[in-house]
Length: 243
Image 1 (tube, rainbow, N blue to C red):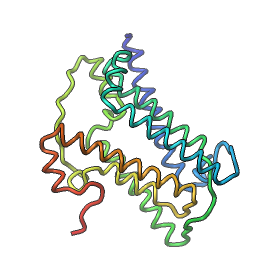
Image 2 (cartoon, rainbow, N blue to C red):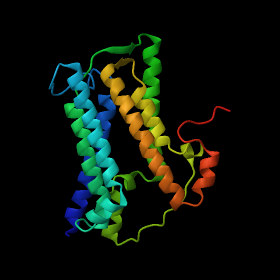
Image 3 (cartoon, rainbow, N blue to C red):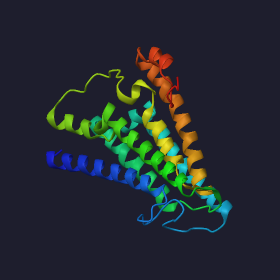
């Protein structure tokens, strides 16, 4: 494959994947500058609350199934026959971003107020929102930000650099929680001064998805990394100890 085409694939993958994620971060908070938010849909399919509940639940279910299927070893073996190994992570990033984009485009609001803060409460939720998403971004760089999007794999393919060995690392936020990306993402999802029933549904479903995903991830990490079992005993999963 032409090197220029490979570089274009890497750039497009990273730009698209990061762009969708950043848009979702803004979409979840009631910013005035956002063209659409979770309570202000791009496409209104139904005004019926139960219909909106079904559509929203289906969108998250499809997203969860896509993630669950594509991380299975059996699927990886099948897809490796069609796509070279260095490009499988980029392919995963593109497909995941598309399914996340479907949620953003077709999400139907359920405008029942669960809570609404004013004054100082707005600043507290805004602070938690910024803190949560900031930690999530920083945590990706503590492991390998570009590896997560499939860019490093493509770079190694172009430069003919061998794949590095899987190593256990414990630095930064990973000294205090085992999964700072997931925990800080949950903080960002729940921190809002205006919580509608639709936003609550989104947060609950994704919290459930994170819990299920971490169960399988922890199982795999315990099998593949000998140091992880001891690390698991010392460090809490999502939220740091207060003593």
